[in-house]
View 1 (cartoon, rainbow, N blue to C red):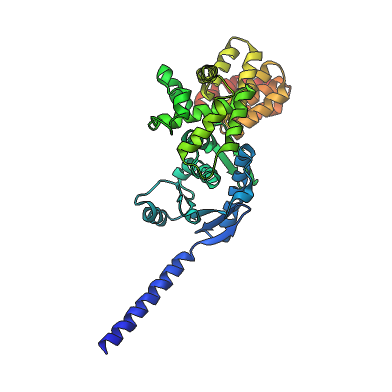
View 2: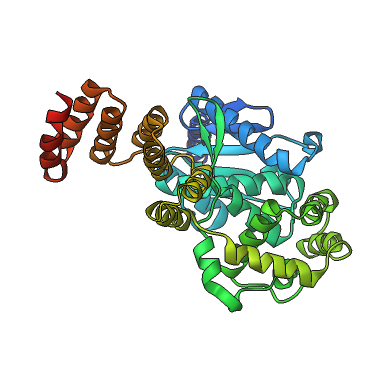
Length: 392
């Protein structure tokens, strides 16, 4: 009797455990994209939105690689959490430790278990997720790519974003490693040391990350067609069955026969030395503007705008340049863009007021100047009171 009751109790507990497990699993709603299968804690609409985003990222990556999508044996899997405790628990069960924001779980012998795990709406995910998303893409086709290629391109694509309201990918070149790499000076790893890192004398972190990004940035931005072609040919020869060492050897075989090592090393070092950060370009533009070299200043500010199209500084300074050249409509457009991207409202409204006054639009001038005075009376109230009588 007791054995029977014990068995019934055991079966009841087992049934309850199974039900709990199923309920927990049902927290994830599935949605399919063209290349991804997404599981989301937030429901079908959120899963579908993330699937569309991942498809857009895939397309951007593959414009560079030109992999054949039919090579994928199954969709790429993304599991999205919004509950941090659930995310940490899931990742810890897989890795024995937690990872902030996002992590790509890769199993060479069980590709059906590979997945990108994401904690959505977290500050860490904004930085880590794009990096891990690229690694998932690359290793889906080439499970063991050369470390320099994987890390360099993952950093390169870290600033690949996505505007869900427009359904469009966005990109600003990632130069966050440039200061550190330039700071290495003569102690920087050689180009040969970077590409040979998987074959001999592995480079430590963060040297391998910084140096790999620098090499990828050089190869993608160089004017030398031979260098760029070598990179594209590397993509073609990488093997899905090779080890990292084997693929590094294959990659090296596409570089050495076609370019002089001494020559590409010199060009690579000069590229890093001469490459300027966004802040350096802005400062050079300001100096050119102060020296009244308006043509040079315009080139520099346009270069900065291309580098970071969502930063207010280039637009503000291009507005100043247009004002100097009496191109008042153009100046206003630039100033308005600066406001849109977060420029100091008092500063820009003051500039808009002066610009409107110079263009003969007195009523607009008064409106802008009063906004400037209201936003920062300590800086602009006295100036505006002095100017207003001219426009009334």
